[in-house]
Image 1 (cartoon, rainbow, N blue to C red):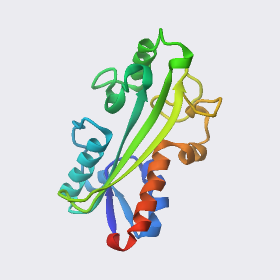
Image 2: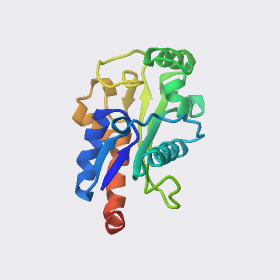
Image 3: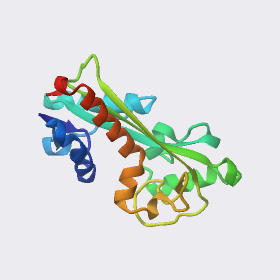
Length: 201
């Protein structure tokens, strides 16, 4: 079964394809099919994931899979949340967003800098699927005071996962994929598909 992955990221395509191949899914990047991303206007990660999946399905006539993820900081009431990629403005760079995050947390002591990465996946058969499949992942940690590491992207140089003494940007890619919120959500989706495997063949 051909399924559109609502992203232009080939790294994400490889990561997703490895876990979903046993279910007979061939993942195609939406960019390969000439589909752009719609505006992310949802108020939650689930709403944005569904919006992107439904749009890709509508444009291609194929089932579609999308993810939406971001950082939630306890001391900021869950911000930046769904605005993680646009925290410092619509055209903000990773550096801009990190600078704003540090500024907002400047007076917050280390013991109150708890945070979590969250990811929601949405899989739809079509643009108006009455029963989309959702999977969730969460990765808890805290926000450091300085950037450490050169891997990853976004807030990774500042995010120190629970139980570790290094930032996400210091982790090997394989370990990050195993521990991450996206990896957790993807394994959860694979389990859901396995439980109802016949309906997706």
